[in-house]
Image (cartoon, rainbow, N blue to C red; front, side):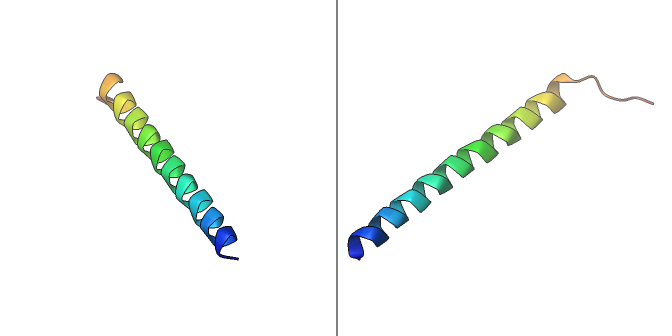
Length: 42
């Protein structure tokens, strides 16, 4: 029983790290897009 909980905690931990990296990558991509596109001066 304890072994299953430990494995489940490990899987959840890895999923959290992966989700955090994906969100950071998306945020960085959005910043680069904003910084490199021409301003809308209408």
